[in-house]
Length: 80
Image (cartoon, rainbow, N blue to C red; front, top):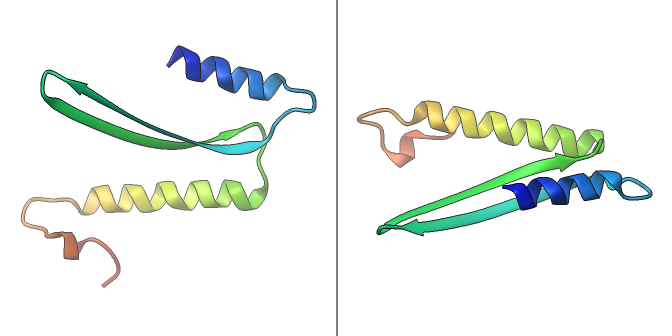
């Protein structure tokens, strides 16, 4: 995580400042457990289109998580 934070600080401190959307994808294997995570973040002030994309993607993720309830199937998640 420290390396990521230093990279973001370097992008923000660039001349001219960098404005971008960055994707982070990382995985860990520990004691037979596999973990995987992905994240998309804005670096600096991004365009309105990029900000909207990030916002709508987050809302879709939250709706999908909320639909994961006992008894539901994958086909129950998404538009009717």
